[in-house]
Length: 211
Image 1 (cartoon, helix red, strand yellow):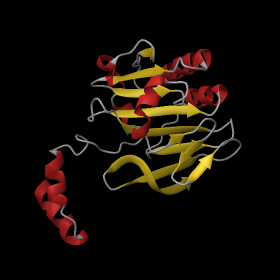
Image 2 (cartoon, helix red, strand yellow; image 1 turned 45 degrees about the vertical axis):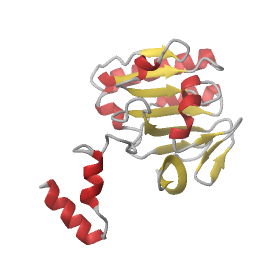
Image 3 (tube, rainbow, N blue to C red; image 1 turned 45 degrees about the horizontal axis):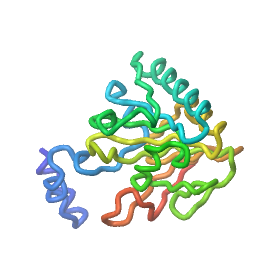
Image 4 (cartoon, one colour; image 1 turned 60 degrees about the vertical axis):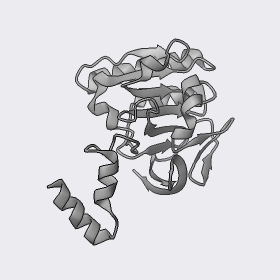
């Protein structure tokens, strides 16, 4: 069935879908896929929440606890473990979906893994594609690949202030797209980011919707 489907899609699109699947094995997520921000909620028992301690420590810790509670209440009574970026090592992050609370300037793991996300944080801004958001009340949720275990996703939940991070985590809204931007005073924007060829995680183009 898979071979027939791949052949049909290849014929319709002119692309070698069968070879693409073969290069990635039976599960195209393995080997570097783009996940949606909500993917990990299908396996909350295989996730860990990591909050930043390089800044906004109290707010990030509270945000992580609020997210843990929201997932427990809304997703099968599973308690996702919460750890700080100061206490985790690579073994804690391997073989898991990793949810990072706090932007790269306050979360050490987010800083290490930053290039793998389809967003880029500045000192007081976040850029998605060619659009930059700089209001301190803005927050983003973005999905990438866990670089230690490509079978699993990495998701960052981060505001441009401690308060924005807390509210984004407590909201626990994880869209089925790669990126959600919650601009201050505006409607959420759900974004699908198209990476450059061979540069997974580096934004090239953005498709946007609001809700």
